[in-house]
Length: 231
Image 1 (cartoon, one colour):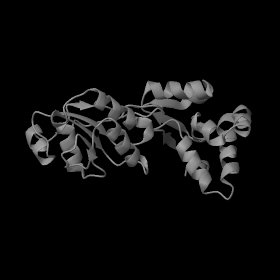
Image 2 (image 1 turned 30 degrees about the horizontal axis):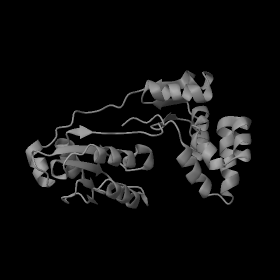
Image 3 (image 1 turned 180 degrees about the horizontal axis):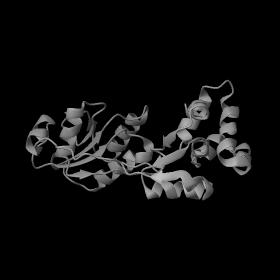
């Protein structure tokens, strides 16, 4: 963990997500007094104004609205982020001074050779005619899967002509809420190879993931709360 490592071994840090509230809350839970630990983290990263707001309100809510990454900026020899948007987010949160050593290095990607589309669709129990809308990666609330299900239902596309696929694992407790949202739209949800109009694959092998990339007509990556990540 960076709080112990960076003071001992100063290094260049990479912030894939420039906001770290979930990490701070998780780390606080490992302490003897999680509430005190979270308050200390809020103070260390955002000073007295944020601490007072947390003491007057709900500490977890306050932490969730902050970047909570000043300790990384201050403890690193330099910091790498992946976009100008992420750098600007740090600027708004922490001012210009800590950004002197923050540098933008875009993701270094290799072109991916995908499987042949028709063969990929056959392996996924999809027809060549179906419209396939897919959301890739971990299925978590901030990616707004419920909103996507509602929009898919309101499109009024016949179930046999369109599929909405969530290619990844749902956060604990979210799958049942997704099921209920689908049912409210008159739709049903099943697994990767089901014949349901909405599918949640769960964890799958890389080859199957690439099949979904090849099979999809539309990829949708919504964000309800941007944390400087790129996807």
